[in-house]
Image 1 (cartoon, rainbow, N blue to C red):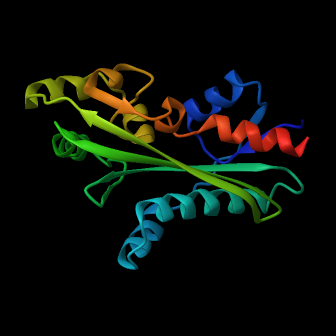
Image 2: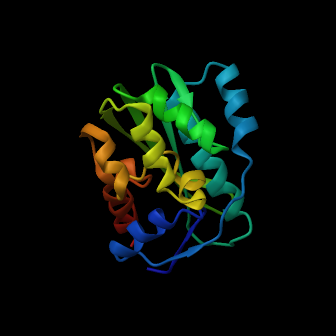
Length: 194
């Protein structure tokens, strides 16, 4: 199979593809997600629909400039009691997010979409339920101090493949879903195309 185009600058998504022998080229969509997300929330869209829409928009946008190539778009959202939590824009906001998740269960939804020539061919969403341990504020501040800005602003407030795993009491679901790319279903779909 030819290389697929990954419409994301997420290093972990690229790594998951490579570890599963899927060659990829990175072409970030640079989609401004927040106004789209805000509009969808205002219209009463479910967290899953928001995630699906964003994954599709990213894949379609990039596939318009990648003639006849398969483009993979992806998006993940955190759903805490029907409230969508977006990536932090500051360290203060990151600490606030950790405090909100502290000691609670939340749902993480990861959606993927494969497009060609500006049209969706396939999409899939998966969910994982995570329960964070209960920490004092100093622990959370210390945890954040060890995370680089690039990691923090790219991957939300926890990296399940790194030190973020220690934040959780339980993780129910596929780890690749938590990392933002439910790889089993992607591989199944790509194999059907061969």
